[in-house]
Image (cartoon, rainbow, N blue to C red; front, side, top):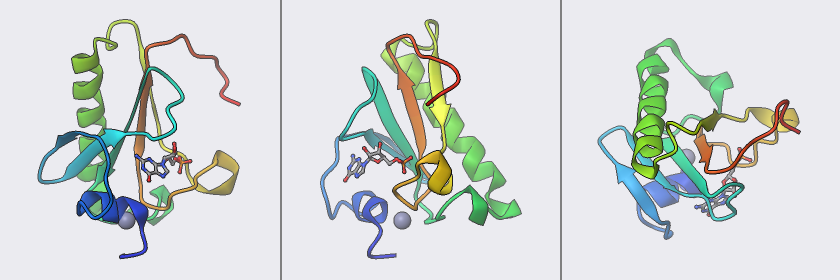
Amino acid sequence: MDACIFCLIRDGKIPAKRVYEDDQAVAFEDTNPQAPTHVLVIPRKHVSSLNELEPADEALVGHLFSVGRKIAQERGIHGTGWRAVINTNRDAGQTVFHIHLHVLGGRSMRWPPG
Ligand code: 5GP
Ligand code: ZN
């Protein structure tokens, strides 16, 4: 998926402020942060959205949440609270079609989300 912006970030072909990576996932700062901490965690594997998830990907998605928790701990927001969000398709506001977990925190948030 050469046209996918997050595949290009994964491959280092366009720059991003990486904060974590391992054999399954890459995490980097969102360029338009919505909270003091706003990190995106992506699987190295290109999966367009949760709608395309296959049973074999279950552990991979679980891993994204583990990376999110690690980042929240490093940022010192695991105690105060943080939000993990995966937007899927139009009504949820998905704009990049490579699964990404938003890790948001560092401020008080409202519910329900807008
Ligand atoms: P979505 O709306 O699909 O859930 O989230 C896409 C997110 O990717 C947005 O928060 C947006 O700011 C972020 N984003 C879009 N393009 C780039 C980019 O080139 N680099 C980085 N670091 N973030 C991006
Ligand atoms: Zn991709």
